[in-house]
Length: 65
Picture (tube, rainbow, N blue to C red):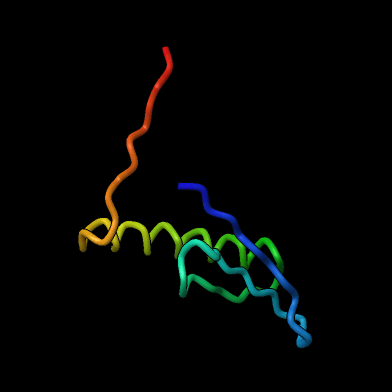
């Protein structure tokens, strides 16, 4: 699964970061990096929760030797 973090600065100076592939994963931060880091952490939590609830299945990962 490829995820993309989109960031945008609000008129009040705060930054917002969201991950379009995971609806509801949106975070605010004082900087672009702060907002992106929070969104990444929330995305990992959301994916773990969805795996636990059976809403997602892990994708196979192929290793090349």
